[in-house]
Each structure stands twice: as structure tokens, then as C-alpha cells.
Length: 358
Image 1 (cartoon, rainbow, N blue to C red):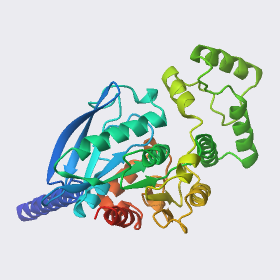
Image 2 (tube, helix red, strand yellow):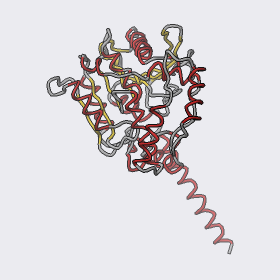
Image 3 (cartoon, rainbow, N blue to C red):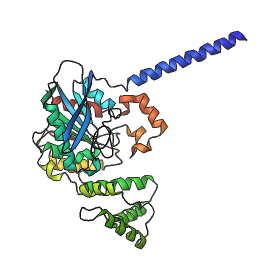
Image 4 (tube, rainbow, N blue to C red):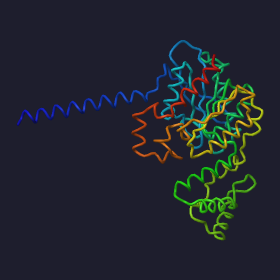
């Protein structure tokens, strides 16, 4: 009897040890593989911005890629970008990411920024890195996600221009992207096509953010509109906050058509085929018409199969917002690490960066 009990205890301990070892091995796949991490600050207008430069193994100076965030109050996000950063580091390319204004250790307020302001901020980061002895100033590239798709074309038409650009999940037109996002949200909530169209029409007719309309007047007009026009099913009746109202008023007319038409800086524009935030097919077609990659081989437009807005495998991680992640998605991502991404994504962006970093 005692022998059987001891045997069960030993088996339980052995299983616990093996499980712990497995967790530790998996956790190693989520560790940054930088030879050195350097904390840096730089200024743009009145803001002091803080970020981290991650250097690969070997003897510098190194080419570097800047990571430009999408929407929201995002810090430098080294935990979010771990697999992307490690892919670049393995290729001998440094990475730099910074806290958006008003987040982490950066001063300011990202909600007060236009896309042109964000482009100036990116230029300031490039100029700061170009002065460092461990960086190759002629090999500075920029990788931007989602909303940064309106930032990078501006950066690419300014001087000094980066060596290359990579956009992930970009949209050509701000307002068209908003309509598509809402369509997908309502479709996923189970609304019919007619009900979705009715909700979109109601929201389109509602008062919109404008630099010529104060927030107080907007709130008054919005409340009057709701009283006169009852909201249909699915319509969002929550008025914007003052800060978000100003941010949208600054940016709702953003459109990259002019910059893309005149872009000489090499750009790789990527979309996930199953993107729920941005219309991948329509935007890829629009970018291709403006960039003319067949006539200008320094440009490339690509749709990645089985990828979502963040380039994760859409069979497992299809979503619109980070808040939609389930515990099962989190567990699957922890186990999969870099394999959570669509297979084509990481090799494609690394090879593009290497092409213009030699």
C-alpha cells in the first residue's frame, strides 16, 4: 500500500517537473534575443519620447528598422513585437521602438497628433539614430502597423528619406476604413445586410468631428440628432470623448493617395487576406494602382494568405480588437510563438529589410 502511494507521488512529481521544464522552454521562445538593449530619448516639438534600441549579435554598426505603432495608447510594446524583433535581430538588423506621447515614459498626448505630426516624430527618431556610431545611417528602415499606414507614406516623401518602408494592414482612406470596420463588426454580431446598411446610414448622417465644430456644439447636435432620429439596431449611440473627438477631427480626412503617387522610397505594402479591420483586397488594389509596382520594381504589394490584421494565423486568431482574445488564444500563442504568424509574413519582411540594408 505504501509502495503504491510513494510510486504515485513520484510520478506526480516527475510530471510536475516535466511540465515546468516545458513551460520554461516555451517561455524562452518569447524572450528578446538582443545582444544589447539601449534606453534612448529624443525630442519632437515639446515632447520627450522614450524608447529602446535592440542590437543584434556581432560587431556594429548595424542597419536598423523603426517600429511605428497603430492606433491607441501604445507603449514601445517589446512584448507585443517580440517575434518580429527577434526575426530582424537574427538577420543582423537592429530594432527601435518607442512609447507614444503620453504613454510609458514619453511626455505629451498622442490624441493631439495628426498623421503629419506622427511622421515628424518618426523623422526625429530616424535623425537621432543616424547620429549613433552603432547604427548605419544609410540603412534606416521603417515598419508601420495599421494606422501607421497613413504615417509612413508621409515619412517616405520627406528628407532624409528612409532606406525602405513596410506597411502592415494599411488603409488608403480613413473614412472608408471606418465604414469597413463597422460593417465587419455588425456582420460578426449577426446583423443582416439590410440592417447593417441602415445602421451605417444612421451613423453617416449623425454629426461628425470637425475642426470647425467645437466639442460642446458636437455633443449638443449629437443629442438632438438621437432625439429626432432613433438609432436602429447595431448603431453606436455612444458620443465621443473630448480627446477622441479632437483626434478624429484632426485625422478623419487622412488619405495617402498623393504621397503614394509620388513615392520613390521602396515600400512593401502587406495585408492579411482575412483582415477584419481593413478591406485587404480593395486597399491592395488601390495601392498597386498608385505605386505601379510593375513599372517601379522598388515597390511591392502583397496579400498574405490565412493572415489577420496583425498577420497572425487567421484560423486561430481572427479578431478585430485585442480585447477579443480568449484564454485559449493566449495559450495557443504562448505555445506557438513565431509559428502563430502566417508562414509567409516574417520571412517576407526580413528579406525586404535585408535587400535594402546591404
